Amino acid sequence: MQTVNEKTLTRQQKLKIWFIENAFDSSELTKQSGLAKQIVSQELNYRPSMRVDLRNLCLRLGIPADLLPPPTMKKAELLRQNQELQQRIAELEARGAPQVNAV
Image 1 (cartoon, rainbow, N blue to C red):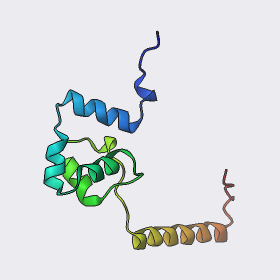
Image 2 (cartoon, rainbow, N blue to C red; image 1 turned 135 degrees about the horizontal axis):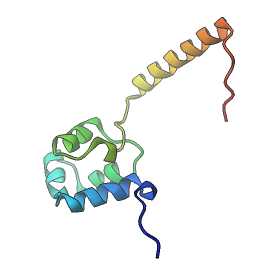
Image 3 (cartoon, rainbow, N blue to C red; image 1 turned 90 degrees about the vertical axis):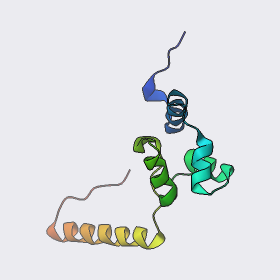
């Protein structure tokens, strides 16, 4: 018989275990968020990131941050970070730093 190894559990599985172990009532999360149950489920379990306001509510209700998807970033923020990274790469290349090949 194979035992469950915590390292093989997905974030979603760990979140479900946490809900069960802490008798967490997800209907309270849905009620406080003002969102439909399906949207909350999508945000928690299926999307690669989640709304900042919903994530903050989850944290306030005690859900550990490592069990939640990262917050969704606005396009402007993503573009700013991308531009900063491009500038850092250009600076490193100008200094003659060894190039890192992408895999």
